[in-house]
Amino acid sequence: MAKPPNDAPSRRRADTEPHHSAPLKGQRARKAVKSGATATAGGAVEGIKSVLWAVLLFFVIRTFIITAYSIPSESMEESLLIGDYLMANNALFGATIPFTSIKLPSIRDPHPGEIVVFRPGYNEPRIDVVKRVIGVPGDTLQMRDKVIYRNGKRLDESYARYLDEGDDPIPEFGSGMMMDPTVRTDAYGSHNHYPLLVPSVDKRAYRPSRNNWGPLVIPPGKYWLMGDNRDRSLDSRFMGPVPRVDIRGKPLFIYFSYDKMDADAAFPRPITAARWDRFFDRVR
Image (cartoon, rainbow, N blue to C red):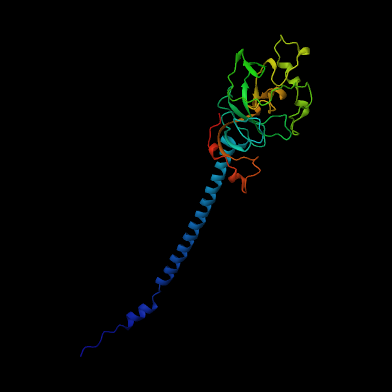
């Protein structure tokens, strides 16, 4: 009768051989955990980078390309109203680097008849103001009985608005009735006209008024800016021409508007007093 095979040696060999399967599984698990942690950390870093790039892009666009402005006064009515919020192109006339007076190269200079945003030096603190370009360097300007002549030709100003029948003299120095408390009084007055008057004008007899002044020549590097609401605008007639470096942007369109003067509007006033028909109107 045959004996069963003696497999004890094989069992002993199997028992004495090292078991590699369990440790290998543990190593793979640890590697998988590390790989997952690395992927999670990498994803977090990429997310932070994306956010930072988005913030940087917004800052660049907001500062150097498109900027929001608001209309705080009635000087541009009816073209622009108090409570209009504008988007303006800053790159066109050369954006200003924040916290400095350094301007980047411009695409072009302002043209007569277009509306611009500028930050005049006669305000303390300096604030952004919106007016219309009436004269550019080299132009000869004169106003007679509410009519402006540029280089001898009468301007067709369909945008101009006159509310008062009378006329007020422009004092040589000091403040006027429309003076804002933030405006430097030493910068106000007809003394700003004297260096610009054509040689034929006798400065000693020169008595300009709101609706009658000049003729004068706009010097290099400066612009004559005026509000469309001619009887309610503190502009170059009183403060002199504006340096080119102070002109910041060209308004493109109204992105939001509401009637700040509507005291009867219910809360919230920006919604109940919104001028929906002005949304996204082009600024002309």
